[in-house]
Image (cartoon, rainbow over all chains, first blue to last red; front, side):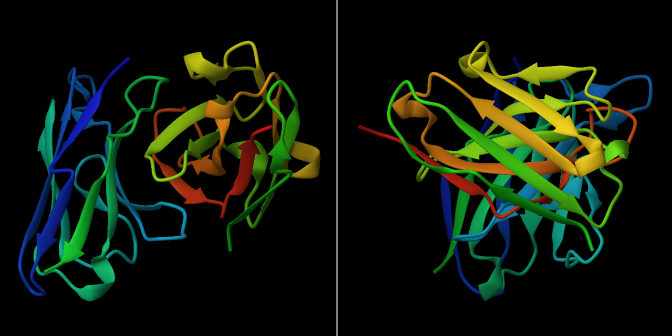
Amino acid sequence: DIVMTQSPDSLTVSLGERATINCKSSQSVLYSSNNKNYLAWYQQKPGQPPKLLISWASTRESGVPDRFSGSGSGTDFTLTISSLQAEDVAVYYCQHYYTTSLTFGGGTKVDIK
Amino acid sequence: EVQLVESGGGLVQPGGSLRLSCAASGFTLSNYWMTWVRQAPGKGLEPVASIKWDGSEKYYVGSVKGRFTISRDNAKNSMYLQMNSLRAEDTAMYYCARVSGSATLYNPFDHWGQGSLVSVAS
């Protein structure tokens, strides 16, 4: 199974500052035939189910603020919140969907400093 | 509006059984792969089982193989998770989620229910 490793486990950032979360897969999730990375990012606020933010490593879902961006390819990926807002306090998860295991990273908790 | 509503959770003794249901509305269930994802208290997300739009393919995480069965009834707009031989480590919030796109399992989960809590304890 593909193992997804996120870092850091938690992050404290001042309002308006940048937050960067890393995600590394144990094998490439780039499918060569279509050049797509099978990698998603989710946001989970306390007491709520996860919400899909970004698919295909860098495609923002409809309605997701443009301060959220995804980048990376192959095995190394990054979720960036360019200017942290109070409503962004949450746990963020990466997930691969390259194989049927569909595993998630361990999560990164983002808080306000 | 897409809605997924789970039900059937509760407190059960080790070795017992529960059947979770996921009622879908706002979309044509028969066009989508669906999945169950669980989250133990204070822990991360774990995909448990996935089922093809016609029920012909099913995938399970290793820890539940032989104990859990995923199924669906598209005519009733519902998906199910039969959980047998429950263990303390199965204690979690169980979410049903829709796999985006319609052709394959290899897509992200674009809609989630609010979850159903399963507690396994004596």
